[in-house]
Image (cartoon, rainbow, N blue to C red; front, top):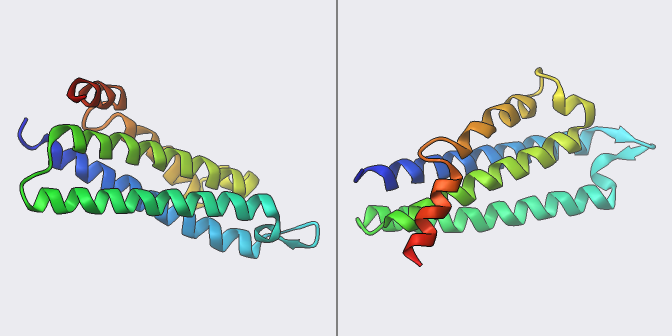
Length: 142
């Protein structure tokens, strides 16, 4: 039980790393893929989606970095670790869903890493305690 905050922090770190990788794959793909004579990355909707994902990933990174600092100081508490795990893995799934969408049909083809990452991400909301349990832990601490 004493190691649960560390385990949950590890899952949060993995979720953010996965989201960061998916964003990079999607940036590369949308810059190369053309539709209606221009790169998909040149469409306003695509730029806005990429900007939203980059912002949320950065916010997640700052929070997880703070949690790492607390962990190294021996001060990461159970509710804060639960917040990191719940929010980080929800963000991972949200980002991967958007990235699959921006890949279009290719996003659902197993040959593309984004498709495999999308499939693998779902279990993250279950590992180390479901996200519903994380919310219960957080709520009890309020």
